[in-house]
Length: 375
Ligand SMILES: [Mn+2]
Image (cartoon, rainbow, N blue to C red; front, side, top):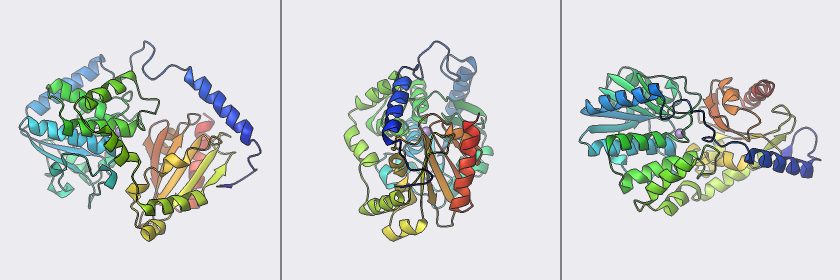
């Protein structure tokens, strides 16, 4: 790793202060402790009315299109496939889709059951009777299916992103849920659909993915309780975890090596909390036969240095578009910073797209971080 600006003479001091920060964080209330109800949480009247409306729409539909966000992750695809298999079990005609052409399902998610339900975006009717959207934080995340979703008889949105501005006819958006899969679990409970192994595999993948394997702060007792119910069906969580996190190609190691070689540490950025960033040129992916989906986890390596609060990876698409993934240890709200670059996400994990070059994009990100740090 190269260091921009002054050398990290404070290596040991940095580590001590991180321990202090982590210790301080450890005594803060968790996401569900305290007595004030979470917005959107169960018990909220408007949220309850939305559930009732969603169940009415599902009961009245013979045919249902379930869609998730583009570049689907384990929560998006797992949620859509779990709901799809459950609703097929109720005798509904079901299609699962997402708005990309061609559709690319990451190799790490190839084990998800129910993929026979997936159809190309073009196979979704121009005006579907009922669309259920999963894990899409904004209408843009519906990609090619955005217009069809809005032309539907009704659009029900299941999501957990705090940045979701609220779209669709029925909004089941719960920022306190660690994954959209939690909302699907609740949907199945309300529909009285028993869990089976294929559905449990999809839902377990959703919560495991979005909680970083139950590590992130949004993980609650209820998250573990839900995971326990999934395991009780007999699913192989060990094989799911190995597939999700511990399986790569050799080419991935070479791309990772290049990304780490290019990594830069800028201690003065993010209001002095520090930024580590790198980028992956498309030519590296082409050279080593690695897909952009395979490098989704690269940010989890880059965010490890204790010296930096914020980590950023820019991934270049074949057309030159840069897709930024960033993480925060908590000093800076990266969802708000990414929103300044027309992106979004969560406080600790967010992203954006940019058409500009690497130096210009990083500079815009530095400015966004500085503005959010100053708030
Ligand atoms: Mn999610």
